[in-house]
Amino acid sequence: MRVVSYRDRGYRKFVDSLDRRAEPSRELEKTVVGIVDEVRERGDRALIDLTRKFDGAKLTPRSLFVSEAEFVEAEKQVAPATKRAIRASRRNIRAFARESLRKDWKRRNAEGAVVGERFVPFDRVGIYVPGGKAPLVSTALMTGAFAQAAKVPEIVAATPVGVTGKVNPELLYALKQAGATEVLKVGGAQAVAALALGTKSVGRVDKIFGPGNAFVVEAKRQLVGAVSIDLLPGPSEVLVVSDTSGDPVCIAADLLAQAEHGGDSVVGFVTTSASLLKRVQKEIARQLERLSRAAYIEESLKKGGFALLVPTMDEAVRICNLFAPEHLSLVVRDERKRLAEIRTAGAIYLGNQSAIAVGDFLAGPSHTLPTGGAGKSFSGLRADQFQRRTSIVRMDAASVKKSLPVVQEFARIEGLDAHGESVRLRVER
Image (cartoon, rainbow, N blue to C red; front, side):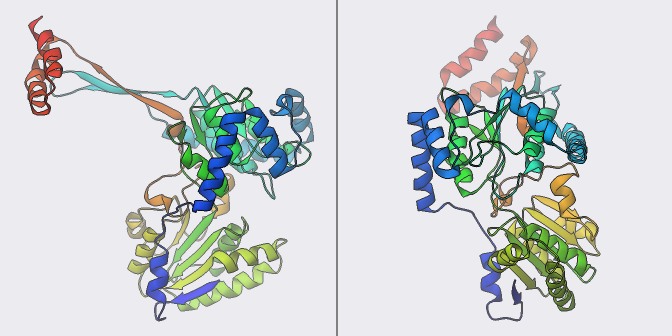
């Protein structure tokens, strides 16, 4: 990990670099435009060709989706312990989701009109589950189970498959438990394009959820308007902010766990304690020795890891808000005060005992969170994002009459005579 102290000449420049705003490269943008256009023009055929090109899977229009027989076979292959873990996670997720669903409301405004909102689930949503080196069973739950809790009738999952053309059994079981009604065996920007635009075999969805690689995120960005999206979540990241109360064993373990996600991960540690920083470095080296993916993690730490020694906790909080971390571990004595000062983190874990991995798999809140500085503008995935909001207004003769003078004044200012007349005529009647 790169280590920078507030006493170093390059400290200010490094801190300024942490104020990020993720923007796609021109090359990435151009590549995704080409993929989206291909799906738009060639539909299923494009999905089949692109899946063979990128994933090596030989699909046909009949095998683009997981069959019922594949679901049944997958369930037979999943170990009982895995099923119990998946059900435990889903239970917490759905309980958390139900608490954050929006509820209908109404009241009378100052003129006596009844105003309110109603919330209904989207009819059909897409959830993207990344493939890669391991089946992201937890991501299936942390997206699909929220849709399930919101009572979305049609949940279409999309996930890349390998050369076998099969979805991992544990992942398939998790998707079924999370309410998936269809599973598309396609990944990448082409899957997002199919969900957004539709093909002969893939019905369009109302909104797309879930994390992915740079191509998936860019496809979601480009297709806003054709479809709604949740947020733009990219590679995993963590920032640990601690004073002298931090436990070096716990801090090192959280940093290593997030670095395990891959070479694009960002792993940061900000502290006021030089002693704690040194102990965390030693603990990272010690724990690495017994991890099966040590070489992979080391590469990730070298590429995207940093440790920052700061003069005060005020400076640490300021840096956190600049960085807008996906996951924040806040380990400080004056927890209540500092928590109130954090504005941009996707998810916050408080104290030495709050392991981020529990949040990744089990706690209840979704681990689909804003990355790359997007926490300044987006929040993490929530159950109410699966609901469509509609406002409602009901007026009677008295409330229309009370509203007339104000409406007429706005109509006069904006030169919209018909607006004023539409209210005046009601009052006269």
